[in-house]
Length: 77
Image (cartoon, rainbow, N blue to C red):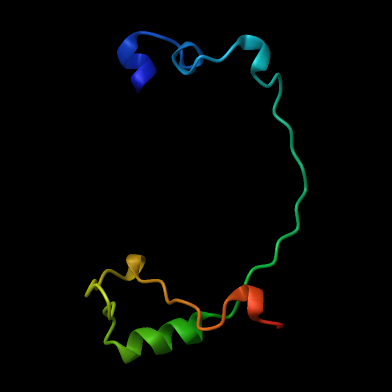
Protein backbone atom coordinates (compact mmCIF):
# COMPACT_ATOMS: atom_id res chain seq x y z
CA UNK A 1 0.00 0.00 0.00
CA UNK A 2 2.87 2.33 0.80
CA UNK A 3 4.48 1.68 -2.58
CA UNK A 4 1.20 2.40 -4.34
CA UNK A 5 0.76 5.59 -2.31
CA UNK A 6 4.26 6.72 -3.28
CA UNK A 7 3.72 5.73 -6.93
CA UNK A 8 6.57 3.22 -6.74
CA UNK A 9 7.03 -0.48 -7.24
CA UNK A 10 7.22 -2.62 -4.12
CA UNK A 11 10.85 -3.36 -4.92
CA UNK A 12 11.75 0.34 -5.15
CA UNK A 13 9.80 1.19 -2.02
CA UNK A 14 11.59 -1.56 -0.06
CA UNK A 15 15.00 -0.69 -1.49
CA UNK A 16 15.44 -4.10 -3.13
CA UNK A 17 17.73 -4.63 -6.06
CA UNK A 18 16.44 -6.81 -8.90
CA UNK A 19 19.43 -9.09 -8.51
CA UNK A 20 18.37 -9.87 -4.91
CA UNK A 21 14.91 -11.07 -5.92
CA UNK A 22 14.22 -14.80 -6.32
CA UNK A 23 14.03 -15.87 -9.95
CA UNK A 24 11.60 -18.74 -9.50
CA UNK A 25 9.34 -20.23 -6.88
CA UNK A 26 10.50 -23.47 -5.36
CA UNK A 27 8.79 -26.24 -3.45
CA UNK A 28 9.94 -28.59 -0.74
CA UNK A 29 8.32 -31.42 1.11
CA UNK A 30 7.89 -31.21 4.83
CA UNK A 31 6.69 -33.50 7.56
CA UNK A 32 5.01 -32.00 10.60
CA UNK A 33 3.41 -33.33 13.76
CA UNK A 34 -0.01 -32.00 14.67
CA UNK A 35 -2.23 -32.79 17.61
CA UNK A 36 -5.50 -34.44 16.73
CA UNK A 37 -8.60 -35.49 18.65
CA UNK A 38 -8.66 -32.31 20.72
CA UNK A 39 -12.40 -31.79 20.19
CA UNK A 40 -13.34 -33.46 23.48
CA UNK A 41 -10.87 -31.31 25.44
CA UNK A 42 -12.12 -28.14 23.75
CA UNK A 43 -15.78 -29.03 24.39
CA UNK A 44 -15.08 -29.86 28.04
CA UNK A 45 -13.22 -26.59 28.69
CA UNK A 46 -15.83 -24.47 26.90
CA UNK A 47 -18.68 -26.24 28.72
CA UNK A 48 -16.95 -25.58 32.05
CA UNK A 49 -17.05 -21.86 31.36
CA UNK A 50 -20.48 -21.71 29.73
CA UNK A 51 -18.87 -21.07 26.30
CA UNK A 52 -17.24 -17.85 27.53
CA UNK A 53 -13.56 -17.04 27.83
CA UNK A 54 -12.90 -17.04 31.58
CA UNK A 55 -10.33 -14.25 31.17
CA UNK A 56 -11.82 -11.84 28.60
CA UNK A 57 -15.52 -12.76 28.65
CA UNK A 58 -15.55 -13.20 24.86
CA UNK A 59 -18.26 -15.54 23.60
CA UNK A 60 -17.33 -15.65 19.90
CA UNK A 61 -16.65 -19.35 19.11
CA UNK A 62 -14.11 -18.56 16.37
CA UNK A 63 -12.00 -16.65 18.89
CA UNK A 64 -12.13 -19.22 21.66
CA UNK A 65 -9.13 -21.53 21.49
CA UNK A 66 -8.71 -23.90 24.41
CA UNK A 67 -5.19 -23.68 25.79
CA UNK A 68 -3.21 -26.82 26.33
CA UNK A 69 -2.60 -27.96 29.88
CA UNK A 70 0.54 -29.86 28.85
CA UNK A 71 2.69 -28.12 26.22
CA UNK A 72 3.35 -30.17 23.11
CA UNK A 73 7.07 -30.05 23.80
CA UNK A 74 6.56 -31.76 27.19
CA UNK A 75 4.03 -34.36 26.04
CA UNK A 76 5.50 -37.74 25.09
CA UNK A 77 2.40 -39.00 23.27
